[in-house]
Amino acid sequence: MSNTCDVCDQGRFGELCEQTCSVGCANNTCDRSDGSCDICIEGYTSSTCHDNYNYACQSCPQDNASHCLSCFKSFYVDSNMSGCTPCEQSCLANTCEQPNGFCTYGCQERYWGRNCNNSCHPTCKTCLRENGICTQCVNNSLTSVGNYCARTCSDTCVNKECDVVTGRCLRGCVRNFYADMCDIECPATCVSVTNTTRCDYFGRCRRGCIAGYKGITCANATPTSKPESSSCGGIIGGTVGGAIAMFCVIATIHLVLFLRRRQHKKRNSSERNRELALRSPDPCAIEPEMQYQELSVKRLRENKDETYTDLQEDNSVNELADDVAKSTKY
Image 1 (cartoon, one colour):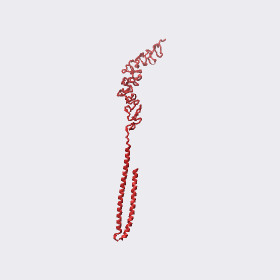
Image 2 (spheres, rainbow, N blue to C red):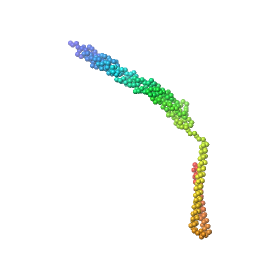
Image 3 (spheres, rainbow, N blue to C red):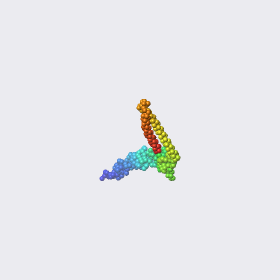
Image 4 (cartoon, rainbow, N blue to C red):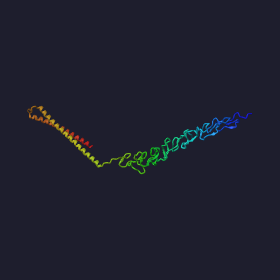
């Protein structure tokens, strides 16, 4: 009868299967003769996987426990791969990348850099990870100049709170100031009301202008009214001037008509003399009585025609004068 076992149960080795494989052997399997492991689980090394290496090392070569290949969370493999180095405590979630230690989720407040190992300026609450420029000041009364918060917000900002980059007031302006940084005073020509600002965000007067000014910002002065006597003088002067003009027009019309009438009489006299010369080449041959009668009748007709013409011209003058008077009146 043989004193050795032909086959051992899983996890055991030896002639009689009396020994147990190392807990570091993968799949709880080892060689039957010497207990050596084909593969070690993470955290163990050596041929039998008995050696527990650096607690932070997640994996290493089976034949070299001092050479770490990867580390557990919150650690990263150092530059010579001799072990695991803790991530910077300023990394968010205390997590960094393998194998360089760069913070995976960024930096905690007041730190910057890939490894979050640089501190922001003391006046900054947070800063850019790339260059350390402030993105938020330790209090809202400061604004950024350069890489750190060094300038105070305007005194006319409500609670002295402003944007860290632009300096724009976050809660508006105190009474009687306006604009982004509340650095412009409302116009003094706006109407003032107790405990109420005179103008809006754009400088427009909210309750109108004081006497003598107009416009949405009350910047335009209103013209001064002229005395009533000046207006009356203008009316009287205009009336007198109109009357003089009308008189001049009427006088001119009369002069023109007078000259036309005189010219007309001269023309008629010339025509009568020419007609007599044509009818009686020899005036001495005409009987005196007959010549007198013909001349009398002709004279009567000419006087009648001339009188009618004069009446027409007089009527025209009167009508023209009436029209000028009406137009001047209105």
